[in-house]
Image (tube, rainbow, N blue to C red; front, side, top):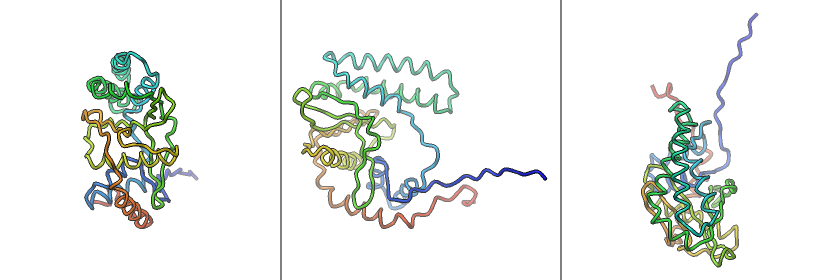
Length: 251
């Protein structure tokens, strides 16, 4: 008798309400139909999570944390890395993550060079610290766990005083202004709670790299009530969220 092994793909389920920072910001500003999709993706995440800009994010944060006196050196490094990554990408099939992470990261680094004029004021103002090792940073609002990792921590007074943070967005889809505001609200509140400091809005920075847009100095306190309500809605709906239909079920 021949035994056949059957591979069963198990649907991953997030039991407690949890969202990434960007998915939460998207949910807050989405239509009713789009909100349902965001909830499904958050509760039933796929096994594949693309990380097309991870190399660029690491290079940028590590380079800025060197705190060079000559700020031009940062962008020379980005240009050099972009050239190198494009060459490396050619060794991999175009549809693979190995190719995409290098090609997309090269584009992100080139975009950083193009917006160097927007970034330069922060380099002059702050001592910057790489925060990527804090990938598990999160804040819980109304029993919903929200991702709250900033890319860099900003210090003033020659590095003695924690002032705020910088978050980079590398996707080609331009952030809506309200999406940016919701992201800044979460990051600011988390930073204040974790470090027990008052963080002024001017030290809360979100850079939409490809769009060449910097969100800074936005007082997001006006969102307190609505975000509390939104998180309560997410918590109340979580157990009833059904998995998305498979392709064969849609036919």
